Image (cartoon, rainbow, N blue to C red; front, top):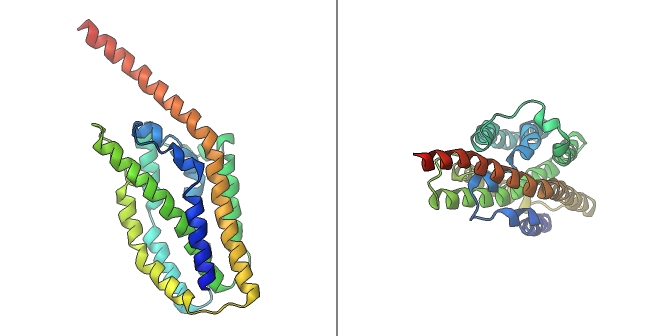
Length: 246
């Protein structure tokens, strides 16, 4: 199993180099840097059910309790997301938004991840699945929280974020005990060659889904950021004219 954990680490390092993260330029206003946020909505909505369905299918009582604890630690993070999106965009997401064409790539990747937990799977692979999700989360939230911290320090922005800030990172750090327990358990396991290959393929599919999700947001990310910038300039013009008239 050590080889599988190393494979997760290697995939995580490659994911951290995804071109999506190149757009996390800290010199831009936070609203522009996080303009992609609404396009994560469908995955955020699916995530809680993915954890629930995966935990429900674990047969070993001890592992099931571990999974349930992890799920409880993740609860309500989706509420933080929707609050942040409204803060960043000025309007709440509607039920129709995640079903728009611009969100297709996110939906496709989310369905791929949901399909993984619905198929028959060894309990040990269900643990690998969760560790794979956590590996992608660490990359994303580390970048997002650093971006929010830098933007807050370098401007007079009054935005108070939870999902995309160190508030979420602090919650994620609580998972470290869970991950350490999972990894310690897995390191003591010897997998058959067949099961080890299944684990490698599972990890590859997890990261392929997230690669596709973030790749799909890359093009839209720039377009949305430009729209956000234009809206900010348009809103500033009347204020500037009013100040000049005064």
